[in-house]
Image (cartoon, rainbow, N blue to C red; front, side, top):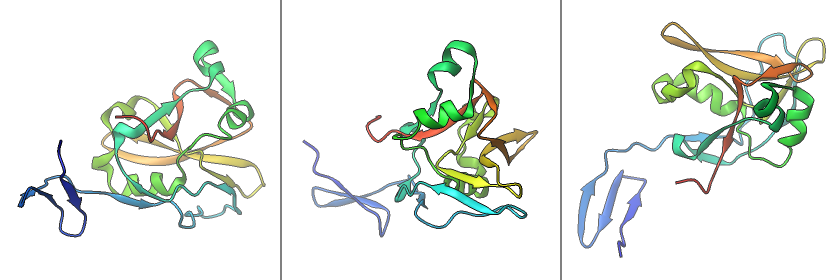
Length: 164
């Protein structure tokens, strides 16, 4: 049995009377903070507060709806309904990843990860969600309307606390 603990303050692991340096840096994202509102947008309708999230890609699922899996696309309202009780990550995670692009998993380069935990209202009152995309060597964000068709390359970033 291992009785070691991680000391967040000094970034080391304590076990059986000795201290071993831990090379892993914890990246903590405040998912309870108010989200960034893009210029020209009215605000947001929903913002799921996910608490203090330790960024760990092994606990992230890139979720597809049943219709996206079967037909290759789904209407955003169907996806929204299926996501109602799921821990979709919010736009605070997207903004954190834009600021720390080296932490974005390589396998995301061929898809468009949607951060559906924050639903925005644009200037016309339409609901939108933001997503990441890569162009050449840099990541950027854009948005999709909730009332549109979304293909199977648009996947919702969901936190999976039980994955290992």
